[in-house]
Amino acid sequence: MNRKFRLFLALIIVGIVAYTLFDSVKPAADPAQFRQAELERRRDRDEFFKESKESPIKDRAAFTGLRYFEPDVVWRVTATLERLDGGKPYRVTMTGGETETYQPYGRATFTLAGRECRLLVFRSQDDGQLFIPFKDLTNGSDTYGAGRYLDVPETDVSGDEIPLDFNQAYNPFCAYNPTYTCPIPPAENHLKVAVKAGERVPEAH
Image (cartoon, rainbow, N blue to C red; front, side, top):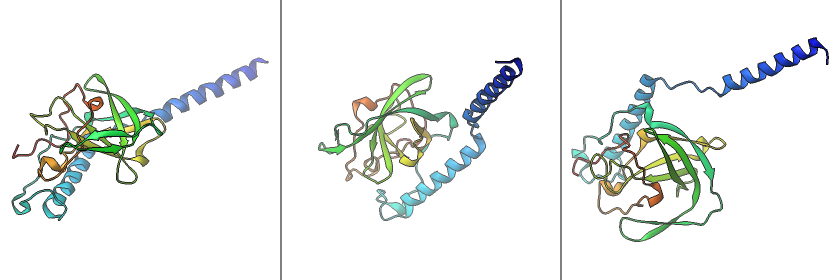
């Protein structure tokens, strides 16, 4: 192998490595744009709660909006996904005492507030959606005691990565109306961190 060819080969390798590193760098979210988008999403949710006949709010005329933590991009993470497709159906206990069957989709591993966390991800009863019920150290004080939920469109999963935005964590309908029965997050989905993001405990609680 002559010297010129070795130099040419070395330049190609350096170029490939540089391109790979550059291509893998994802631009950081602009905090102002992120906050604005989240506030708009919350306005849409508040409008649903106030106007929709499917709202769990009994007195919609008096409804003035849900309670939230301030939006913060630090609560948005990309988790590593271990697929569990084909696993045994999972029996989830409901607030009414009965159980419902959910199909495991995968296990998400990520770092939140400096701690490694894991959450079971289920296929939702709504086509194309993934469902993540969870509890954390804010339950019973800042947030609803029975836990909160995350929904992720399955199309957002990329390879072995799944985005989790805890700013979008929401309360089940039973937090606003006791006539509803809702899934209780399983023990595997109890986080040992205080997730100060998303919906807060309803005013009445």
